[in-house]
Length: 472
Image 1 (cartoon, rainbow, N blue to C red):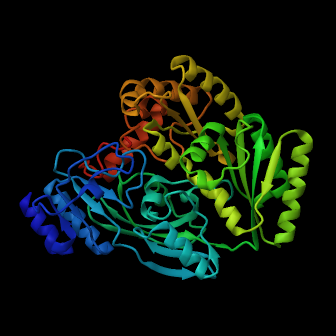
Image 2 (cartoon, rainbow, N blue to C red):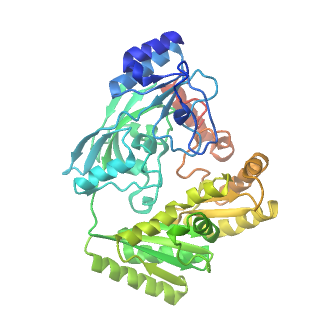
């Protein structure tokens, strides 16, 4: 492989090919996943600076028979972007591809490199007077290429859709090192198969996304946030329906948070001052984006909450008075995963179930888990508006988290995934499959669908070099 390393250095520059040959070089930032679930060893970390260099790297790896693991911000949760332990895989980091290529205000699009950090794209859009609505907890470090590769969701899917729905076109380097330029900003193009949708959500197993053309939206005139205590998950679903009726497209966020999840935030981040959580099983965070005025938005919110109080759907509520208070409420929601990490290792589930079935799913699965593992603690929160729950299981009080994962993860995953299947859901809503769920997919995915996926993989990556061991 020394010939390949030399070729890569001549292609992207020696400073951008990192190997273990230099004892002073620490590759752990690339070789270890964010949750520290896996730590591999790469042949090299290669950091190309543009699409042509990505294509040249892929061609060199294909000629040498070396598999490639593409990586963006390395914030994934399913071990889909780190190398294995063989020391033979090339980790291709895209973070140097970080330009905003163009903003087309008339077409409401922006064309960007795959390595752009999501928060930077939000800022660039805002500075141009527009909204790029993708928003998630890792936005300060995740990259848009990774968001597209995993079809990330976030807190505004209810109104704007997943990352797939925000993408109009892609630039992709194929497994053979060819460049497909599909960066059209067209909203209508009926000339055959939608190649874009093959690569969005493929987790780097079919090709490498190097750029994208994304949708922009007008900035709302006002954005208001409310925090409401609800007496049950069924009440939360009823509040969602009422909010959709009253706010229509203005409802841009609807998050549900269980009492234990909020209790962890209160325990580990007391400075955040979690409201209303101690006397209610669930709290809901709502966001209303209004294109008329703040007064209009506040009037709609107050009318909505008044009706919800009358129906018993809401038992208490607060409406943020300003942007600082609104950010504080959202910070509480986004701090739940961090509070979980402070509490100890846990078993994460990123699931989706039809919204109408969520109360029954939670009631049945909560009870089944408690019977299987008395004292287990359930961290249930997520994007109720689009049917996506982060249904996580924490070890019983005083039980070592590492031992709990080792001894119980397989049993708990099977129990939860079987319940998801019974309720017509999916075992991966927004985090992807990666390697953590790859062996589970055959048990819960339609066999015809899997056969079609394998055929696509074989056709586009016949050598099997693109992120092997992931998805299928």
